[in-house]
Image (cartoon, rainbow, N blue to C red; front, top):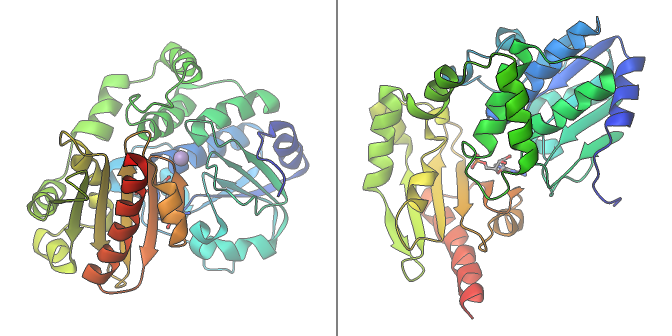
Length: 328
Ligand code: 5GP
Ligand code: MN
């Protein structure tokens, strides 16, 4: 496989040659994939392109403030043809979900992403595993398309950058991020309002679900691994949706002495979705990859199809192994 690299020139060429463009976000959409897609929508509309937004999944209520977010459609496979399909923040082909069907309907395919596990599954791949967020790469892409910053685009980019950097706290939050934030502030970014929506305000269902997860909390691997589980009943009893589980895993890492955290939850389809987190130098993307998942060194995920407890035992064994190897 070719080494990963940013390639905004090649992506810009694809865009310049296209009139109809499908922009695709990943399943279980987060702030970075939706911020990047909505920013691309605004950018491409400035270039008078005919743009469609696709996401195989529900848009979380907490991200409904994003400009143009109402235009997202769940792909049925009957859309198209398109001159170009552009995936943003989609670390592997599986994470397109039903949008995968659009690949065959598109003359050209391209992607912009920041996951180091990306297998470069498009014709044109602009992938930088060291970039803190796909939205940072979208800003660079704007220069190659000669589209200037606007307040609306700033709102989209802030959403992706702030959520993927843990509100500017993760170790890979770099100078480029703060440089970009300065530019966004010059475009009248409503920082306090967005910060409250993205990081403080929680729905009642979300807080009740957090209570269930904290009740399930146990410590394994010599007390260094925090484990939480959410059953289908927990979701039904609280009225919470899958999206409400999004940041719960972080609470596992908040306890002193914890190096890794796991949240396992049963989805309505009966799958077990895992969120894994770690403190540097512990890593979890290697563990996720062993089970067909992926992600970043300190934040990764995977899906298993066994029963909840059995699935947790399997992933926990791998985490304990990783934890032990670091202690040796
Ligand atoms: P989360 O735990 O918040 O769902 O995901 C954390 C990170 O892992 C995100 O960057 C996400 O893209 C990645 N991730 C989550 N689940 C999967 C998965 O099943 N496969 C892959 N390749 N990446 C995943
Ligand atoms: Mn991202």
